[in-house]
Length: 152
Image (cartoon, rainbow, N blue to C red; front, side):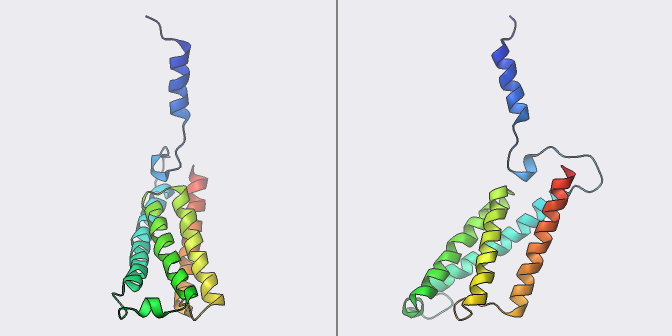
């Protein structure tokens, strides 16, 4: 029995489907696969951002501070800690999955931290080493992303 035309077109559509996950894209031939380097870098960042998000939860739950200390702080401080407790873990999940939205959420989280550290240093710690570390991570991520995009 011959195949119908609709089955052939759906198979072609499935082959043409591009996922936003970096690791599901077809692998180019060559010595250095930048998409693999990007995936490894994103997974390392994911582990760091899981630790950062869990440290915000430790502040909320009173693990690193005396019980009641979080509730006694200003509303701005509380909102900032809760924001980072959520966005850092969401970004970490997206980074681990090596998806495009994970990188975007991570950039949003890191830029939020840098902007809040610049304008509200009493709420968000932003020492010179922290800012330099975050800017270096951003530069490395954007550089590897650019190389991976050129590779494709």
